[in-house]
Image 1 (cartoon, one colour):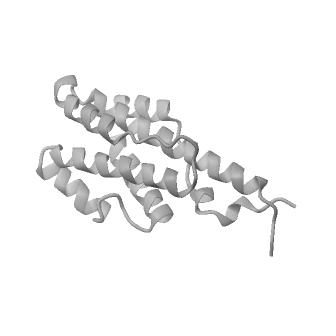
Image 2 (tube, rainbow, N blue to C red; image 1 turned 60 degrees about the vertical axis):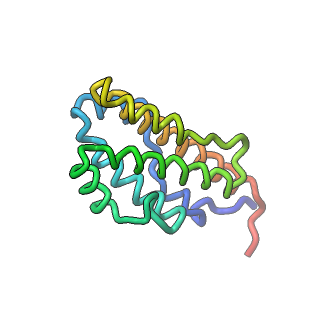
Amino acid sequence: MARSVSSTPFSTIEKRDPGIVLVISCFTCGFYLIYWYAKMYDELETLTGSTPTGHSYIVDLLLVIVTCTLYGIWVDYKMAKQLFELQHANAYPMPADSSQMVVLLDAAAWITGFLTNLVSSAIMQDHLNKLGAFVLERARALPYRE
């Protein structure tokens, strides 16, 4: 008998299409990202026991606003690193550390009108989706033990 996948924290993660994250963020002039980051913080805290920076989402959001988004580069870097560590912890084949790319995209956001920041969010969503699918598929394949 296969294992119930509801026993893994990954079963609570909402799969969001990275393309939809990108499109909705564009149509809402980036305001969707406020919701998206809140969800990602909640999900990463569920999976790892801590937020990417160790602060609450509200504290980090306020720091991003006060620093005119510069602190957001640090937040995205830490989020990408946390996703990379999750990939390693779950034996994900070929883990991808996108932290440097995310920092470059976020830094370029000042030149591109923050469009590349949207791309970095879509990349991180894609990493979480693929990791979640991998872990859930592996859980289904393992024999069930009581």
